[in-house]
View 1 (cartoon, rainbow, N blue to C red):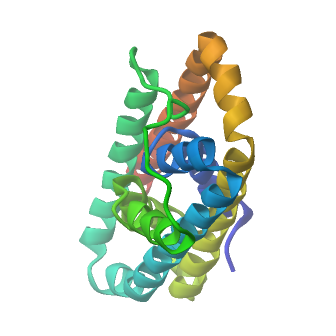
View 2 (cartoon, rainbow, N blue to C red):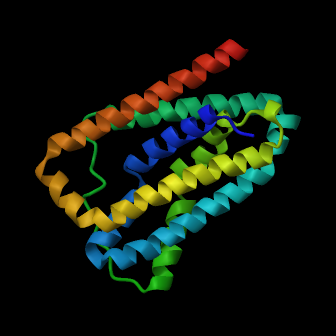
Length: 212
């Protein structure tokens, strides 16, 4: 139903976004370093619930976007490309802050950790634009079952995000100590991620131009 290129494309974007500093990563790292791995995993469960909320909402509405308002679909695709370029610039510009510099947070019980993880995810602009603007880039209406394509692609993103974030939670303390002693590694990560995101944005724009 969905092509291998679509799966690989959304996987590349999901990996790029989850490895770039943002609200989810910063919150998880801070919780894991200051309150322990268990707190980080409770918070990650809330973030996973937030992913599912976004996926459910978008899956139910994409059919209307594709079949009723084609110009809006085109606008969404171009907005997604523009957002990727913006992320690329933020990754490449000098003076970027490491997500592994934790913010001071008071200890919280499991229920609050889950809730805060959920709210952090729902209020994360990266995730909102990912599901509204970027995921549609890889849905092909000609293949039919638009909602099912969206669901499978969204689940691909969720699996990657939770796997990488879970690894971050488990290794946050070790990684933070490693990176804080080696600032050159932070620069390499930013440059690599910025290049990948910029390349994906150019691909989307040129593909759209060719199809216009």
